[in-house]
Length: 459
Image (cartoon, rainbow, N blue to C red; front, top):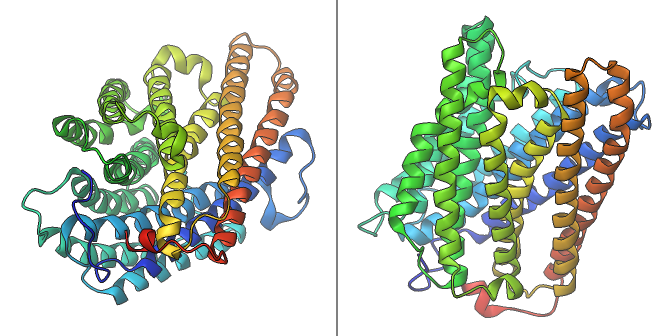
């Protein structure tokens, strides 16, 4: 749904959106640096040897949390604060609450970084946020809901666009998912039941927080940039309800061959395959929307980021449909295949969409034209090729490791064989860091540029 007409300046707090994006990209840079630091241990060049607070385990947890709660959450909230007032025609309830949410989110992120490095991480994957951070996160999310749900309810549009469906669901799902993962396994449900909940949390964080915000923003930005309505509104709703029905059942596929009841594991496999069918319908919807405007892949960097992310999304979801089966799990369980898969979906998909959003919105937030289009190109190709190399490299490494373990080859042999792949992974990470650095330089130089863009500033 393309925007029908410009909205009044009073609806969107551009400064708030800009701060969310600046924070997001700052955490992205830090996240890549922590990831690169962690990767050096695999070929015996770890630079923080014998420093407990910077041990590889803690650095790895900081890396993943920087991506989830620093990079992704800040960008999604920034995009939501831009899109929601424009889709509803109603401003958020209170700008003071908006800025309070922004401040609390940064407290959560800083508390998580220093808490984990200080040894206060919780023993839940993706839920390592320290105990003293969790209440702050819950308060911030409650305030966010109080602030943005009333405008959606009071929307001037009679029929809510699908983006608002995704945002509304994400607000509820994220609250339930965060509380489930950070409180129930540790305090309420022990043993295999707690492990099952942990699996749900790991996957629902992606499917019920990241995915609805990501898809919701794509349903907003793609029609706006292409100036075409979404090809099929019916498919967009099928995608929404398919996500809502099947995704919560996926989580246990992280624990195949575990003490969790087998029927629960089989159910997770069936639900995962069903989700991939739903995702295919969504991807088809977006590519049909682009039909007749393929030139934008050459002329529009945001569209280029969006659609490469969609190709990666289809790839990783197709991969997921196979890798959750017991046959695949015999080979790839605990291997670098899983690491490659996780990087492709979290950064190669949602991270690419966020970079496209930044490229589209930054001139509109600063009132300045981009300083260098050439840097856009360098940024895109370094990150895109780096991500592709990392994915292929880790996928190949995982297959080799899995078959060696199945053949009962000595563990040491699988480590020796993996070292070249781990070096390649670090090289690809350096490419990604170089590309992201180009984006940061371009953003900074654009702010100080004399090339004003008054029309974009009002768009």
